[in-house]
Structure formats: C-alpha cells, structure tokens
Image (cartoon, rainbow, N blue to C red; front, top):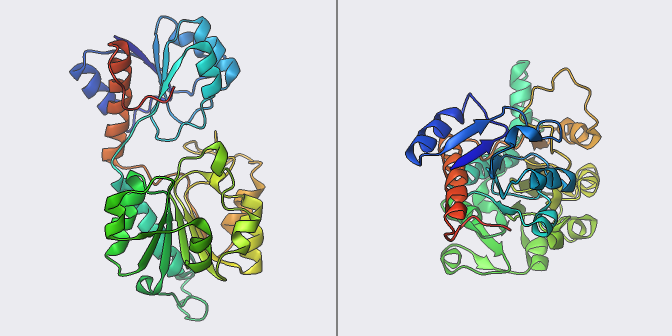
Length: 327
C-alpha cells in the first residue's frame, strides 16, 4: 500500500518511517511541509495520508476528497485540528495514534514539581548570580491535595506516579476505572475545585469541556491553587487564567499547551512578530511556566506515533478493526 506523509521530519521521524515502512511493505511519499491547499496535489494517487498537528479544515478536506484520499491519520493523540464533521460528510476516515503514557506523565510530574518549588524564578536568578532566598521558598508535594481531571492512560500514569509522593489524590472522569481507585478517590468537579491545592488536566478537548476551567470554576478553587495542563489549551479559558494569576487566586501554573497554538510550535519563529499576546503575558509571570507542547516528545513516543499511524492505515485498507479509528 501507499501512504503520503506530510510534516515529515528528517531529524527524528525518518528512521522510524524507514524502519516501519520496510517492515510493513509500505510505499511512502513525503513532504516536509504541513498540508495546504497549495501542496495537497502532492498526495495525488495516495488513498492514505499521515499528518501531525496541522489544521485540516473543510476546504482542505474537500480537496483531498476530490483527489481520492480515503483516510487521514494524525500522528497525535488529539485530533481537534481535523474537521471531523467534514470528514464524516465526505466519507473520509480519520484516525489518531497512541503512545506510551509515560512521556506525558513524566513531564507532568516535572511541571508540578517546578511549579511548587518556584523553579522558574530560581533558574532565572541563578543565571545572574542572584542567590538570595526571599520569594523562592517552595512547598512540599506530600502536603498537597491533587486533583487529576481525566483518568485515561495518561491520567492513570500520573496518578500512579503521584502516589509515590504521598499526596492525597482526587480524580475526575465520566468513566471510572478500578485501577485508579487503588491510589485516588473519584469526586465531582465541585469537590475537586473546593478541596484541591493543585489541579492537573489530562482530557481530550471536546465540545462539552471547552473552557472547563473558566472564571466561574476558578472562583470555586482554593486560594493559591496550582494549575498544570499537558492536555489541550482549550480546556482553560486563557483570559480567566490570566486574571486569576494577576489576582493571586492562582498561585502558579505549568502549561505545556495554550489556546491558539496551532501553526506556531515546532518552527523557528524567533525573528517573527507573533500575534500571541496571551502567550507573552503568561510567559512574563514569574510563577508561570510555558513550554511549547513538548510533553509527548521522547524517542519512544515518536516511534509509537509513526508505527501506529502506518498500522492504522494498513488496518483500514484491509478492512480490519482499527483501534485508533476516530471517524
């Protein structure tokens, strides 16, 4: 079979695409750029297309449909960058991938610890030989009540890891998992907002949880609450977050994702003027860490993403059940 790969990265993905395309006898077409209306023609003759976090809107979906594309596989867990409604209407299948939850779980724990130990300010001061103590006293994780929103594979890994720190853990999900109950107790959102000193998000972004953390939710949280997000930026109302930080209601934040990041990350933009005012405001706070959607980025995760994207296309072409099917 043939798969056309957009956003093909020579420096990290190439070795895995070569390995798995040979293993599965797949012919690849590649383009290092993200898919656009201008380069969509490159996938002519390919029924299967692999992308990353590139926006596939209705217009581009229709273009692929006219070219005979039957399936789009995104090499990411999240798929909110793909117009799935348009895909359904046009009969184009969409799939995502899965990868080891440890990469995001590790990163989440790192952001939690950096946030509560004021590591951003410590590192900034150390760079200019300011070794003074005022303003950098941290807190200890065993003294925290932590709320984990979302108990899928990543949320479960975070809960398991947190349990080793001795903190009290609350969990929230529409679907409860028995293994989670070994380490945490399920509670409703109101209880978590009221009781928890730190809240970490591990949900997919859906219509019903867009801006789950908004002005009203923040008002119900404990004073000085710490918020960590390694899931999707749209789960948090950025304007409300900024107001919460400015008022002191939010004591710290660790953000690997922010709203309106699509098309910005994974490129060298240091000489560009970016119209991302909220990002600049967030990065300016001494108690906020903003990283460029890096939690997933390990060797194991990249291997898994490439392998699963190829496998998903193969399963669809063979008419077999695809565990990564979205549409």
